[in-house]
Image (cartoon, rainbow, N blue to C red; front, side):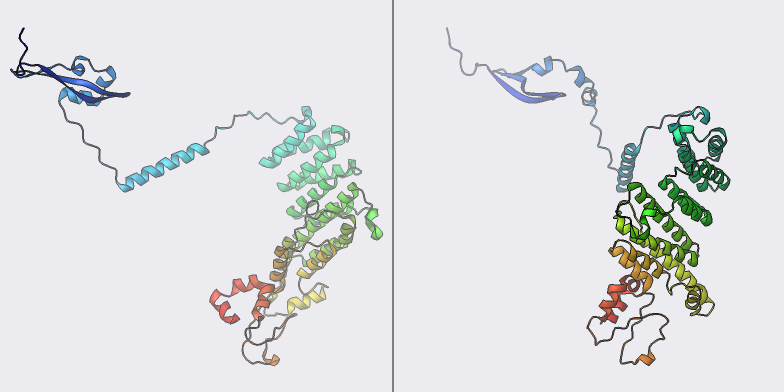
Amino acid sequence: MKRPSESNKTSFVATATLLLVLGGARAFVPSTFRRTSDVGSVNLPSFRDVRPPSPLFMSTALYQMKVNGTAAPKASKRPSRPDRKRMERARKHRKKGEKKQKPPPPKVEMKPLCPEGSTLDELYKAIKHAHKIHSEEDLEILTEFLVHKVDATFGYGYRGSLLSRVAVASLSMNRLDLAEAALDVRTRDHSGAFDPRESAAIVRALDRAGHMDRAEAVVREELALPAVFEGGGGAEATEEEKQVLVQRTLALRSIALWDFLSDDAQGGVATMEKVAALGPAVRRSKVDMQEDLKMNWERLVEVAAQCDARRRKTHADAGDDDAAKNKNKEEGLPCNLVYSVLNTMTTFPSENTNAIYEQLANALVRRVEFVTGAVSFDNLPKPDRGEVTFIGRSNVGKSSLVNMVSAAPIARTLPYHVRTSVRE
């Protein structure tokens, strides 16, 4: 047998390609077999041509374009920068809205108010709800029920507490008639079981409504000072007696606050004297000023200074600067109404804070005048009140001493470059 020559030798050359399909990769799949011989080369069908494509690949746009012989579509034009920013803002707004979106509250059918069949807890909630939504109709129904349809034994003796809450809610709506009816029945049927906290709440509500005389009457009748605090006592007081002392102090403070706000300087100073008389008892009973008795001295100093400023401005507009000072002397008032608050603060346990000191400095230091050069006291402005004079050579700290006392007023009246030049 004859061995075939090299020219007649048939060889197979296989090529491999990387076929990418959706969902994975098939590496080096034989794609074409080429048979070489003397006659020439013949392309045999490849495995890829024989194997039909997957239905998933046939559904793609790339396969359809290959079958139809169309070119791939060009990439879409990139949106402009304003369009991109607008889309970004819309996306952020949409995400922000989705985070804040909450399911709507369930709809609850409001039943008509019927106090006759309600429990004590339901009546408390009804008064609170009427106060919150300012429903005068519900308050009228509740007042009618508590005043005329039940007696003092209703609710295991808690009728007085319900009446006090009705009175506070009525005063917030300026319904003095309902408040008067509730308070009269409360005083008549429950005079021996007053809660000091409820009495103080009634006083504050009367103050806000402008009925100062009735508020003072409530303090006098329901928040009388216990006998244990008279004559220098108070160290052995019970918790109930301390509660009366605390609520009486807070009620009188509220009256003084509203006196100053209504420009009743005489009433404000007189009430502050009553508060000052309670200071030693508060010290002896060791009441916690941070938790139980929050006096808020900053607010008292502020309203007293505002009242004094309005009095001085009224006389200054009339052309008489000394009239306010002379009138204070005639009425027995201090030259500055803030002194009444300051005298009261000295009788209570110390609460020296930076905020209180700053408020006092702003209220007491009314004017700062810088006089430069070699001058005599005869050429200085005429003093209209107590004054402090700092004398010294340049760069010794006169302005710094002034700023320690009244930094806030100077900062408000002088710009930075002027303040710097004055110090230099």
